[in-house]
Amino acid sequence: MKTFKLAFFLLFPFLFSCKQSAEIPKTSHLTDSLHTRHTDSTGTANIVFRSADSGQTWQDISNGLPEPVKDDYGIGRNVLFADDNGLYLTDGNWIYHSNTNATAPFWTKDVFPDKHSNIAPGKTGIFAYNYYSPILQKLNGTNDWLPVFTDLKEKKVRTVFETTGGTLFIGTDEGLLKSTNNGKTWKNVHAWGLLGKVAELDGVMVATSNRGIIRSTDGGENWDLVISEGGVGIDVERIKGGFAAINYSTAAKTRRVRTSYDGGKTWQPIDAGLQTQIIIDSPLQPINAGNSAQGNDSVWHPKEAAPTVFEYKTSIIQVGENFFCGHTDGVYMTSDKGKTWKLVLPAVKGKMFKLSVSGNVIYAIQMENHC
Image (tube, rainbow, N blue to C red; front, side, top):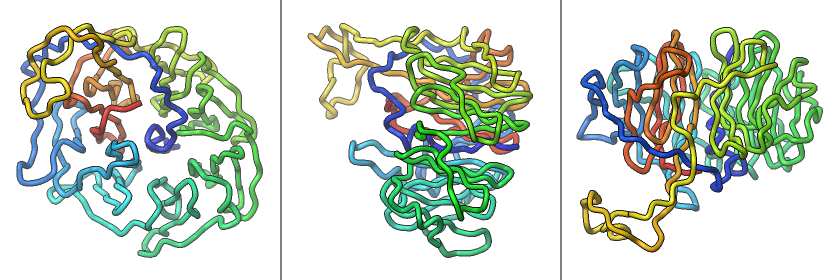
């Protein structure tokens, strides 16, 4: 069984509302046990960190990666996934791979097809796709990207994923399509096809959607809402004996983190130790706000309207007995199933971390803070 590491919040803006509430930041008193991040001053830094010891130490493996390509909104985005072979990342121009035991140089680079910004894992090779472009696949052991599922070229594809059994699902604006014969024929199995990420375990599938978290027990033929609180699904992940998920609750005005150990039927919160998420509209802001020429923003003074500060829980994974949560503060860890959380990797101001895992290796990808 595996979890499909799709960078769903990068691929589907409709899944995220900038009107979400944001978390109140707390002053973090980091202990001496928080190890300094290692960087290479001669190369790119602070993009990807790796931990092979359950979050105790982190290594910056960014050297060799380009700065993220900025989208139409001026936000730098990398699209990524992790599987048993390590981490794959694309900036829209090249595709980069780092295996779990890589040493410097950490990355191998391969050509990436024009007009294709998204990637997804497949049993026989990586898929590349875009909203308006045909789906391509680079078969394992080859160097060429070839068109696949050409009859779907007008379907406005938003996500592609393949189960461990080889069943294909494609989320489009016209619904969720399923194929059990390698894409020869397709069946629309869910009218709300705008799915972001899928996890599967023992015949059960759970997925993020624009209505919350949904679940299927019959191979994706039928889907039921199992977490619906007026907001979108943010993340799903397979954990030991069950699933973990993040969803947005409009009533609580927060992103909730939950686990399920009965095949996704019922869910228990594990975020009691994380900050409550609300919108911050501070009456104070930096004295040099809006003036990049002034380098020190430690002096504050009243302003008529201070900017709203957003903070997000982005992803949830489990390694060993510990859970890790990607966040705008950095990477949090809990060893007591959410009663208490500890910041183990702080984020640069204005950025946030998205987490992926390959075996026992954790990857923390730092990117622009955005909804």
